[in-house]
Length: 123
Image 1: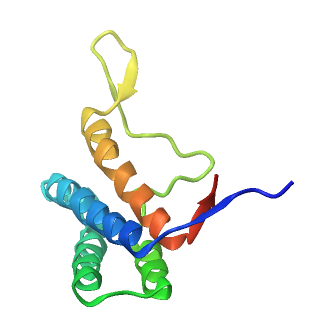
Image 2: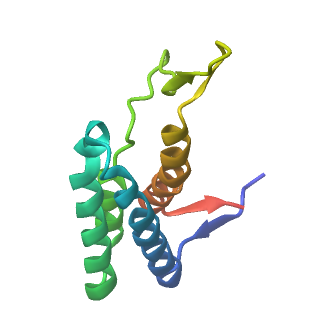
């Protein structure tokens, strides 16, 4: 049994680049007030700039793959990693509110970057 493959079109890629730019526009300002998170800001700004350049001048799959791979995760998510937590007055722990907000903006960025690095998907 062979799977149906869908290969991204130029229009798909343009839409994906716009998506990455939009997602980065939502993430970057959110990170600026947190010096402990700012080490990745340069990569995110550079990725946004590169996506805009590719939209303006055209792109190859190699350029899209390089861009997708240049967008880092903000956190080193190793096997024992746990999200930053805060303790409530009653002693229970929960994800830090700032982390929840950042994660909501970060995941679409990572998804958009991953999509640029792939040539399509199985239907």
